[in-house]
Amino acid sequence: MSEYQMKPGKLGEKILNGYQKVEDRFVTTFLDEDGSLKTGGMAEKATAAYQKVEDAVVGGYQKIEGSVVGGYKK
Figure (cartoon, one colour):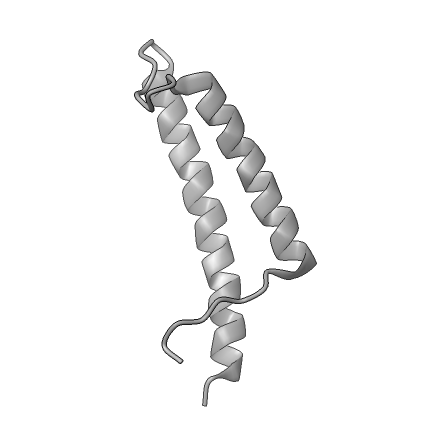
């Protein structure tokens, strides 16, 4: 049972949906169709800000997941 996947529940779904909306806006705004970054003065600042949001969301979700999984381990 080294591989597992948990159902995110209502809170997890809200978090994932919110994150997906942020990611979609970022992609629409800052990426070309080929996946390359649109250049411009704000591109570096925007990607840094996006990375902070992504790190916070993923890190927070991993803490919740770790707490839940840790509660069931012997």
